[in-house]
Length: 273
Ligand SMILES: O=C1O[C@H](COP(=O)(O)O)[C@@H](O)[C@H](O)[C@H]1O
Image (cartoon, rainbow, N blue to C red; front, side, top):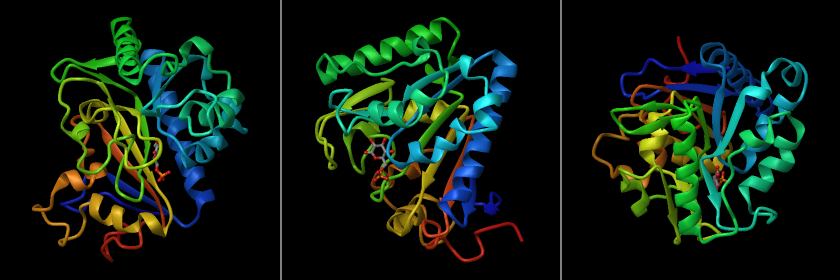
């Protein structure tokens, strides 16, 4: 695996894998290590995930050694975004995660903070933020007092081919949100139109943010989001690349890419020499 973290224009660290299997191996090792550190330090691990192929990638955590070595009882589980569908709908990030991951690991059900699908999307966003605020009050989730934001131990995102992360889509109004932790949108360019999403202040307050991108169809968006090239420049409209706006204030950002997704990054920026 190649890694790059020292380019002056680079935010965060790049970890580039030759195959999906290698990427999954490195990703789950990274998550397991963060979990161990957090539990040692503060007796719990707060993790928020987004959906789609990420859930397959973290499936290795359900296997040995991790199934036996990770302190699952102290995990608190959240979603960085959810689609406006019922929890048993095929498009639901909750269903995807439950079926592919949470049903296979012993995270206590009361530590799984999911988004209510029995109320309107607006009410569900408010309720989800309220639930997160209760856990901040209970000192389960740390807080960044200056930003008035929760500090999740890990927010695990997958970038779409248009550069979206969570349900923050290019040029969408939600990218401007400064106060709320959770917002809803009704105009997602991808199906379904109604979504609930963490806002950028929450993502950028996390202790650790991981962005995963795989496949050739993500190469242009990676090139735009990861500013290692001169052409990316400082003048382009950042709202055209939500992933580019991910820049933890006081935390770590790591990109996990496969070779295809990394193929349009500048030659010479793909690893330490
Ligand atoms: O809509 C969503 O997409 C992203 C990933 O995009 P994809 O095009 O690679 O499937 C996902 O992480 C997010 O949770 C989801 O709601």
